[in-house]
Length: 205
Image (cartoon, rainbow, N blue to C red; front, side):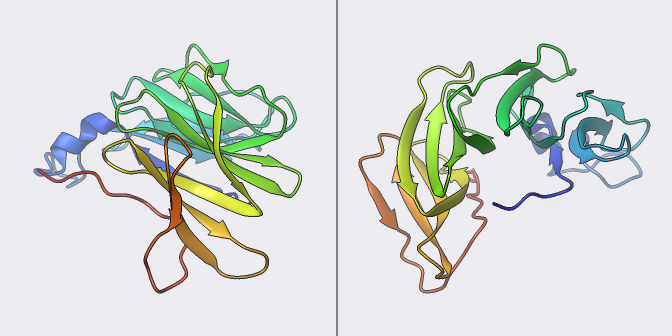
């Protein structure tokens, strides 16, 4: 399982500014959530895209990583090991209302919102077994969609009905697979090369 040191994510409200960058900086307006190690551990912080003072959104002795804005920009997902193993947490955009939403056995990582904000996809590791699952934003209704030797980095299709992820079989190369939200239909993506870290683009209008 890979762990990245820093993440930069722009709040969804900034998407509308992409077509016309205002101000002298040439950077779209919005808030950037990211992981910082300035406190000695990893914490989620936020800063305006135009610069200025950064603010702590989390403040604990644990490592908090992988900030992920909700589609409406009001909440963030993140992963924290504050209880030992990594788990998924959600908080308000101002850092308040922090609550843990994963409570099963194993390590929960790589949370990502569905396009409509009604589901969260995640990776769950138990021993040498990796699963792709979904749950509601309050942690209810957890369902495992697929399990294999290695699965990671889920990304949602724009229609919110399919999740792509990387899967490795044995010591072979990673390949891209898809699974629908029922877990009944899964298949290898029809691409002739190995791949990892998929990111599905939104629909373009």
